[in-house]
Length: 514
Image 1 (cartoon, rainbow, N blue to C red):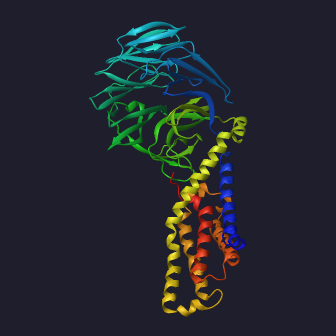
Image 2: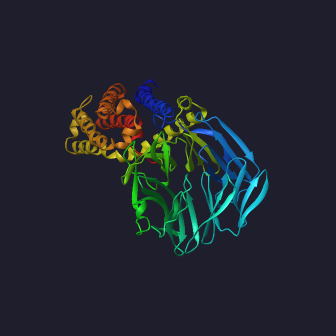
C-alpha cells in the first residue's frame, strides 16, 4: 500500500494542486470587470418566455409582450423602477411610449392609448417607424408624421413606390426604405426638417436569404455616415456582415453608393469577430462608439453572443471591447442614460441585464455571488475537458523515446539487464523532455495569453513552467520508481507523470473547444 502511495498518490496530489490552481484562477476571473470602466453584467428583475418588443427613449426602456408593457426607469447605480401597464402592442411592429401614452399599429390603424382608452389617429396605414420624439407612418407610398407630444399629424412625402421601413434618428431625421422590387429597396435620406432627398443614394437587399437586419446612422461634419447589418443564409448557415456608407450631405442622391464591409476584431486578443450584427452608433462618456453583438471568445462562452463596444474611427477595421459577462445570446441592446441594457436568451427565457460605469456598481458587481461561483466552476470543468485535446495532440512526444528503447532492446538487449537505472532510460527521458519545447512555443498564442494566469504569461513563463514540471516530475520519478521496473516501465512512468502535470497546468489554456 505504501509503495502504491509513492507511485500513484504523490503524482495525483500534485495534479490536484494544479487543478485547484485552475479553479482558483477561474474564481478570480469571475470577479474581474469586462473593461476597467464597466461593471460586470447585473441581472435585473425582468424575464419573459417570449421575445419582447423594445422601445427606448434614452431615459426609460419599455418591453412589450404578453399583453403588458413594462417600463423600466434606471439610474446610473442601476436602481430600477418597473411600472407594468396592461396594453397589448401588436407584434412585428415598433411602438412609441412615454409611460402615459402608447402609439402603435393595430389592424391597419395608428392607435394612441392613454389610460387604456384607444384613439384611432389614422386608418389604412401599412407600417410605422418610431424615434425618441417622433412617429413616422405610411400608407403605401405616402409618408406621414405624428408628433406624440403635440398630437399633430402632417404629410411628409410621396414616394414613387411603397415605403417598406423608416429608421428614425433622435432629432427627427430618418432613413427611408422604398421598394425597388421584391428583393431590393431604394434608400432615401430625410433631414430633421423632413426634407427628403430627391433621389435614392443606396440599394439594400430585402430577400429572405439576404436582407438588412439593422441600420444606424448619424451626421458629422456635413457627412452622412451609415452602418447597416446584412443577414445572409447560405445552405442553412446564417451569417452577418456590417457595411458602411459615407457620403457628403450635398451629394446624397447624385449616385448610388456601395457599402464597404467593416470588420471587427477583439481588442483583447486581436482575433477577428465573426458575424457581427446589430451595429448601433452610441455616445459613451462623450465619445463616439459602435455598439454591436458578436461571438464570445472567452472560456465557457460556448457559442454565446456577447455585447461589444468599439470606439468609432474612420477605418474599415474597428476594435471591439467585450462589455457583457452574461452568458447565452444577447438581444436588443439599448443605451439608457449612461448604462447599457440588453436581453440574454438561454433557449427558454429572456432575462434583462445591465452594465454601468458607476464606481459603486462596478465594485459591487465584482463580489462573488452564487451565480458567479457556479460560472467559475463550470468554466473550470470546461477547461479541463479542453485540456484532454492536449493529450491527443502531444502523443507524439513519446515516439522518439519509444523508438530508442525498441532499437536498443533489439540490438543491445544486454543493456537492459544491468541493475538500477541504465543510460538508455536516462537518454529516453532527456529526448522526451526536448519534445514539449516547440509544442509549447506554438501553443502560446494570443488565446493562451488572454486566458492563462499571470504567473505563466510573463516573458519566458511557459518555459519556466516546463522547467518546474520537469524538476517536479524528476523528483517524483526518483521517489516513486519501483527498483524492480525495467527501462521501459521507468521511462514511461516518467513520461506519464510529466504529461499528467502538463495537461493540468498548461493544457487548459491551449485549446478553446467550447
